[in-house]
Image (cartoon, rainbow over all chains, first blue to last red; front, top):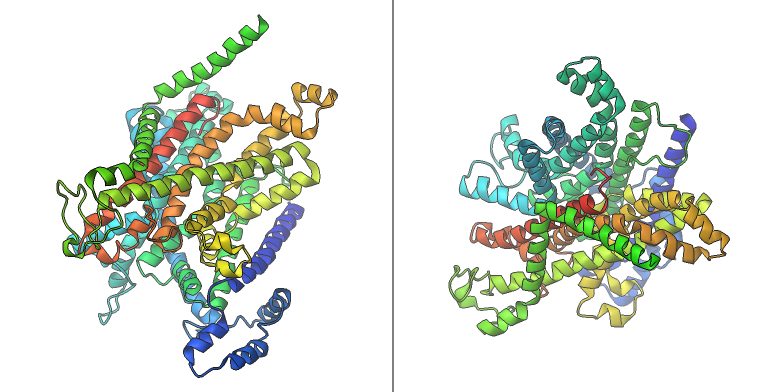
Length: 326
Length: 306
């Protein structure tokens, strides 16, 4: 177990290190390098000045040297300064991370709370009318473009009904109250929940159907256990194992959803931060925010793997492969 | 004689699958819809010609015109015909979905076959690579890839200056991250198939690794690959649409269902209906591909439970 864990941690670390280099390299290929931005800020700069500035900041050095330089700084805690926000990168990052965790956390809980009963019900009434309807709704949830869903919700609740705000986190100039902030969260959370509930429901349904076919379910029924007991006590506990794994693996997908939703609703989270940083040539911030997002998804995957082995003793942790939760 | 028997069996397997598919009504309806929407999109120039309009022709005197006999879905913020632009957008979105899915499936099949057939350290490295790609934050990565300046990438100018560069770019970047599902699927199946007697027989006869993979193993994997590829198209269309919506995918004046929605948020107070058509087109098309994939799975791979 511990060897396996160490192995997985090492792998995640390698991925992170590789990604940091790849993204550093890609950032160098972005339009508008830092010197161009300085030139546009100060029209009196000559092209000689530009060359000197380039040398001064080491931008004429090869990519590997610049990366080593950046990495050395980053390891010593120098993550740089955000150009857009004029603050150290971490000062900008932490509040955004908190906002995203709040948004993702609530959407995730709401989605699972609805998907669990819906998926179980559909599974034990397989091929019935309600199963058909739940399936249809799940497919619709998977297939709806989340940005369009957000636009529809804004049109309905902000433009037509006028009951919920369309963007931001609190009423500007208004009294800052919890109730006011909560109103701003309703539409982003609703969008994210609808976007993830379909796949969650289908995971639960598939897992329960698979479990209900097992021999021990037949044994439980033969013993005379009530159907409720068979489902809740015997089937559900086993069915939840793959569900936990797949939902944890789904975390990266949820994060992508957060980027879309935060951008549309102008919600100051990690997703919007990354998007704005990339679009605004804020390389320091984009770099660190991207690596944070990578750490988050890697941690989600690691958690999925560990949870799978912990919940299901049949899975041998020594195996170097086949640890995918499929 | 023996050939005849094999032939009949071959036909009946597919005929059986076809009959199972026909039972899946939603999949049949979806298939018909997809054929219809592809044909309609392909016919966009014909509609333009018959009605004597130009999809890119702005007409600032009749912005936001409501649907009429001349303009079936009305006119947009520049007075362009919404219906025709929707069809042109459909051409691009469907093309991106289909081509990207095929490229990704091809890539995934090659990687999965090599990993599964070779096994050992080749398999270990390729599967670590696959796991790593899966564990990356997808959308931020795509945004970075979509935002880089191609003039700095060292690609030949002929490609960068090309009119369809945003099309090639989106196909490439989505395929780069989209091959993992097929690779895992193919690898798992190839791993078990390579131990089967017919593969051993081919090996004993001295068949090359390439021949065994392409002639003996691959044909047995066609059904799951078709299913996975079909199911991936919907997802790819969604990715293309969100990147184009954010202004990073297909660039105007080329229309795609995603970039038709780019201005929708600003126009939501003036003309909310403009946001409706491209969105519903994406939604219905994606759900149709998902139903089709589901139906194909039931038909081709009846043992698998999705």
